[in-house]
Amino acid sequence: MLDNIKLDKDSPIPLYYQLKELIKSEIKQGHLNYGDMIPSERELVDVCQISRPTVRQAINELVTEGMLLKEKGRGTFVAKPKIDQWFLQNLLSFSKEMALKGLKPSTKVLKFEAIKTDEELHKIFGDDCKEVFCLERIRFADDQPVVVVTSYIPCHLAPNFLYENLEESSLYELIESKYGHQISHATRVLEAINVFEEDVKLLKVEPQASVHLIKTTGYLMNNQPFEYSIARYRGDNNSFTVTLKYQK
Image (tube, rainbow, N blue to C red):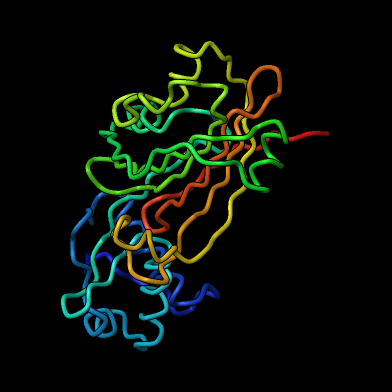
């Protein structure tokens, strides 16, 4: 890698940005792969003939973007590529989306019970909805934790839901194939937050790590809400792509 580093000190482009883009290019072209250690700050300072703060800024921005990973006492390594989630424009089950990406999906149920509907859930499902199933799962891709998701489904829409195996079956497929409902669309709200304390061990992240909080309300063809979910995606291995259509 060091042989490919050539910075143009006469360019108006900041030196840290040039270095950052060169390292990024090495990763994208496959010259640096997942798990490879990049040169140390001292090596980059000596080769590039730039200051350590300049090198550090380039490295830190790549760490923030999820392309590099710092390990205390070991060095800086190329991070595992993020899972690009399409679901901001496509309504797919987690299992189907991971399979389309060539990843092995798996699920562990953490909690599954019927509970009384509180004020927040009444606003979503209506005052006539007295009980909901509360389903909490952790979803994996290639055995790595990706997301913890808590789903609420009105009991009257799926009377025998508690007897379903939600580690092996898709929630959406069950709603349609077994309970005879037709799913239409969903609305989603995305926020960036610090990880919940109870999710730290589940997601294998550091306390105060950033996570993507996704709130989804799913609707049937008759515009009736059938699911409300709160998903907490790891911030270090997930990204989200949105396709926008130009409207005149």
